[in-house]
Image (cartoon, rainbow, N blue to C red):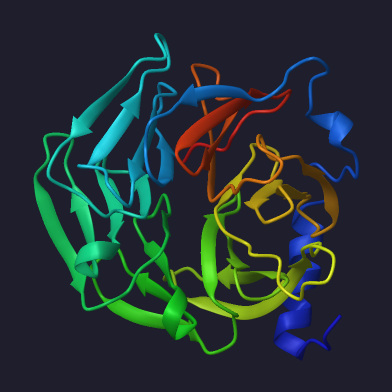
Length: 297
């Protein structure tokens, strides 16, 4: 465990204190259901990614390599349709507090906002964005993996590089249930980082707060997509499976991948009760019913 600077140590202590009433389990039994396996939810794609959810529990996703736009998996029927066309190459996706999609349009090297009718607003260009999250306050945070950077687009559309050069290939990104902590996984390392979110949306006191388990003989965990559960646990897709951390940063366990030798790159809670954990796994999407629900902001 690295030595923490005073400001970082204070942040870590405050984070631990704020989580005193939240989930602090160390067992998968708290949320896995016996006899509930992974189930195939969608198939026939090239590289699924960008899972996000709306209030009704409908799942939205993209096919980064060969998809046409944003797809919708209906919470009631399970049917999949192309929801918005002519938006190929999106890697990160979330619905913001204003009801619009926010997207890392990786193919076009830009961050955009998209209305439910498909109207596009360009927020930022010239960035190789990977994944993003939008706070209730309207701040957009996104990862830029090649430059080792975490960015912020404030609610009034100012762009800041919030952190650079420290996170090893920043990838998945999510936010705590109290909206005070930003969390980012390393694709090129073994840590999940955390920052304090200040009142103006800026980040401070960043530190490698959680440690992912590594595959045998490897030095990187391939941390990828991330999401937050309603009691504050962080779910992070990795080469070993979906690693789950409680709010204090302890590893609760690892949920096995739907396909043992396959990959999982994105995860999200959806379904009408928000208790289905969905994962993007190459050409398919799988779901698994859990005892817990996702955090929907």
